[in-house]
Length: 437
Image (cartoon, rainbow, N blue to C red):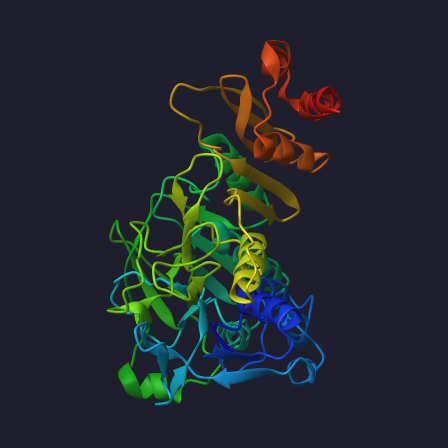
């Protein structure tokens, strides 16, 4: 049997190894469109900050790992899929047949339609090649503008700020929304992250948009620009929505990602309303023998039953194991995903779980210590904890996730105790566990 996997990130790698373990004699082919050995994007900020070398981003360090596991790697990109003929057409012109197919193509960066986004000093931060481009521009004293303060943007922000701050440079972060990380944190939690970031030297501008970017041509015109050395400062001029302009060395675009699924047009594979591939609890798509896993999927939130695009690496790995097992002839099933976000910003750890935004008809408790940058908010539905947001605390945080993921009813007494002091969630978790023992 021939298993073809599109995507050689963490999802594809985990699935390929799961298939090989279950089916030692089957053919396994992994297709990836980057001229790199499989690596983790989550390691790129550590590379930018100099905490690791490029080798530290690799998913498997043994150069013979794939040969030893008899997994073939093909450097190409899927162009189209014919689910009736069971073939994939690749960007290199090859048509590849499959018996089982896994779509693990992940996400792609989204760039807003702003004039000047195609300039060479406007870079994304998504691939190893992007990281190299940023490192090449991070010269001493660099003035950097970052567009986007979502989850990915905040991870990049720390690496860039720590790097430029050592040489007298600066980082300005622009966010169109009214707060940082609006899709994973409550307004109060976001405000704490912002103030902490500003204390760490980052200029944060929310409710602000970039209207245009253009090359900064010095006085004297093009001839003067050509004459200036490579290390010229302030290569781009940025115009903001209010008409003001500022100069920067370069711009990092971190305005979000979307499922990478362009190759599925006309394939018959259903795409959901959120833009991801629709899968069932076996990670099977609507096309026979076609599975999907990871950031490109639109799966079910186990706590709400609603579809979501849950683009986090732990979720992708779980889905990859389920998909790989079923492609190999098993009957593995997922209970659904859990919204789970963990963000570290200059040492301040922030987390959110489940329905952190609350539910209709539910209630909540919120406690904040702004001076200490400590915050906790619990969301309730009847006598269950369905969501939580925590800033500045890591102790016993897994118990909070457990309360939400198990959907354990607390009873009126424990709910009242948590409403009085939400920091007692560990006590509630243990009490619930003992009652079930």
